[in-house]
Length: 354
Ligand code: 1CP
Image (cartoon, rainbow, N blue to C red):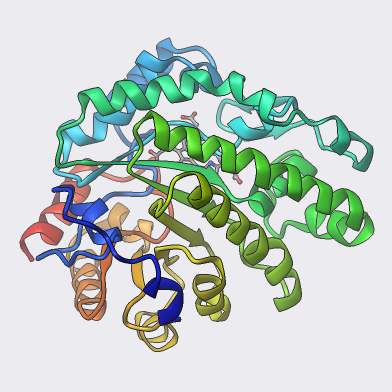
């Protein structure tokens, strides 16, 4: 494990951005902090802006509004990073699939069939995402220099689960069947997503992102062979492809539910840091991962809904548990709309001041 970092974790000097510097290997006196889904419905200013913006995709593709939403949480809280406001499903949209977000119901796509894969748009579809790159430039211009700007995309398997089922699923059954019943079409779909995602992330870096995160939100429910083929290999190709264009590009991988496969994920993909879901025990992570591997996470978002001593206690034990390695404090999955803002303030204050 040390060897994959040996040849590239040679960051020049500090950039002065706390979170970026930590990803690059420079220790910090406290963990940098951001909150997964930090722009969103728990913020009244987001709900107000969302009302005026039309559809969710309209919001994602209107740079002034998307930039404003990206910056909203940083006006309220002393976060170390902004994360681009967009969605993982803008990629299938740009590749020519029909994508809709029904109010209160989540995403709906036209399920892809094996014979549709050849018709997906390649890099020419990237033009559709020009508003996203403009959003990155606007955010960069409005962000203080010590704050890190995080870009992202969904990892190919996770995006494919939505393209195949047409919606979010609890066990990814439709995509798991498709992969086994139509192996050639499935491999072609993953190849298209890998190539598109590389080009998309490279453009995010060029527009001004400091770090990108690969959201593999559905890394669970896969046997070890499927995990190697559908999660590890495509994520590794993205890491290599992005770094071929942007040498040393800092990348965080978030294989949610990887469980006992988390060390293989880190070692074989070459990500700089790994996001841990809240089901990952701190002690298991510390045993499985060499001390040189940085981690991000992993408070249960529902602890922030309830707040109080149980939240503070768990947050402190996560911080203490990961004190021997690089650690970005975060939730172990997205913040939920019911979360009281006062609890978020208290949590961030605790990360800053103990
Ligand atoms: O009406 C609304 O406001 C829509 C709610 C919403 C929001 C705020 C969706 C629909 N997407 C987003 C933004 C979003 N999505 C961000 C913005 C940056 C931030 O502030 O963090 C990010 C990083 C995402 C990424 C995303 N979208 C993921 C990966 C992270 C995760 O939660 O695991 C996934 C799986 C999606 C798909 C998606 N988009 C939206 C919903 C409700 C979902 C989940 C659908 C499901 O499977 O149930």
